[in-house]
Length: 136
Image (cartoon, rainbow, N blue to C red; front, side):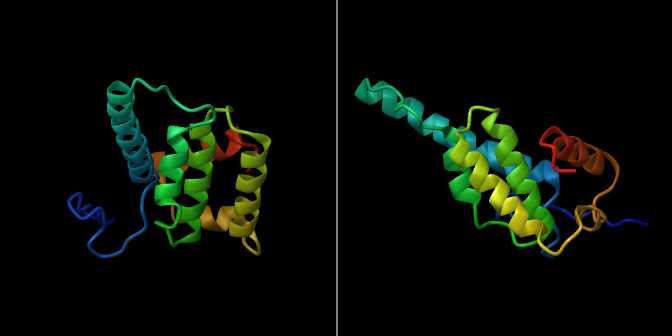
């Protein structure tokens, strides 16, 4: 029987250091996205200033989580998610950097070997996202 890990939301961690599922990785990313927009809303209201050109809430989320993941599959999921969350609005420099990071993660690895730890809906969702970006 497959064991289901209980996530400790208070400490933002699994008690036994299990792999971070894709759904939770997305939640973490979107939570940082929300925090940035929430604080920015207050700043805009108080200062009557608008968003700076090329300012992206996803960049805050990406920078905040950049070193949060250790396993190659987690790092790959994070890079894929970052590219999807940019929604095609990213610069060519962003694309080149993300593609380089993905090449580094996959260096000497087969993407299918990384995907072996995924199953069910998580595997289907992540495969769909990889295909969307022409990665696998």
